[in-house]
Length: 160
Image (cartoon, rainbow, N blue to C red; front, side):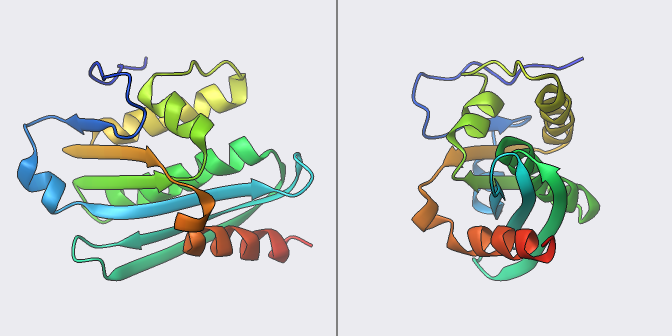
């Protein structure tokens, strides 16, 4: 069962989710730049994630080749990789930046998730988000997500 996030304004720029009013968590949040892609869509797919601590120092780069998948599947796998990393490393506050407007709007509850395969990934992401004290997700243009984009492309290259 999915528990929806708190009501939000119509502004699609930011999502703030907090179990406690989280000004401190917001300032101590790690940032995960996530990207996913598929060449041919569907086609060879992969994701890339670049994670920084609250001071902006890189702490992890994650990427994986996913086989023959869609770009939306790859975007969600990148998000899940970031959320799993947070869970495994006891990170309680996470800001996610993605160039996937669809995924960001779905995670915010602005768009419904209709595709059954994506719905499963969405529900898993929501469950991991609920374990955090603070969560924010926002959309950024590709040029503001260059490291994650590079990692995703390297993952796709590994699948050739």
